Amino acid sequence: MSFYMTYLARWPDYFHVAEAPGNQIMGYIMGKVEGHGESWHGHVTAVTVAPEYRRQQLAKKLMNLLEEISDKIDKAYFVDLFVRASNTPAIKMYGKF
Ligand SMILES: CC(C)(COP(=O)(O)OP(=O)(O)OC[C@H]1O[C@@H](n2cnc3c(N)ncnc32)[C@H](O)[C@@H]1OP(=O)(O)O)[C@@H](O)C(=O)NCCC(=O)NCCS
Image 1 (spheres, rainbow, N blue to C red):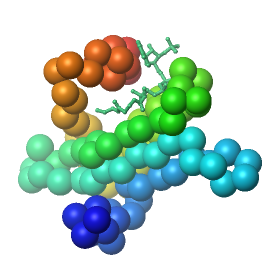
Image 2: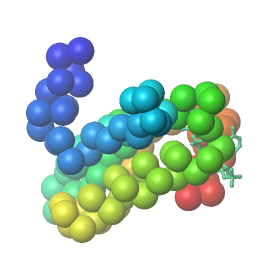
Image 3: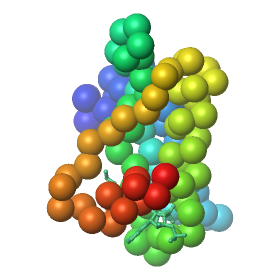
Image 4: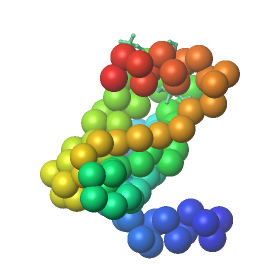
């Protein structure tokens, strides 16, 4: 918990929640901006969409938002992330983006 609270305090622009009517959480993204010189970049720490809201382009919207913030506000050169090698759906998604 303290790990993510530190993230939130330091990079609040990189935390977004998508809510359905009734305040049900549909999905969220969290990240940060880091690096030096030409490796100054945005980083996706986690992106998750609740099972009942998947395949409606919500992760795409959240990823686009993080990319936009890292580009326009922080002037980052690129965005990176880690994904587990066994996470085929996420790898397909990132490949499409
Ligand atoms: C991966 C995840 C975030 C995708 O969320 P989503 O909102 O369903 O994704 P989108 O609707 O924006 O999908 C965009 C594109 O990614 C690809 N994609 C997404 N889910 C996919 C799946 N299960 N299988 C294959 N391709 C997939 C598709 O090309 C899709 O476009 P399409 O629906 O027009 O074909 C969601 O499945 C999830 O939360 N998984 C568990 C957490 C996780 O693995 N997060 C990533 C960790 S690195």
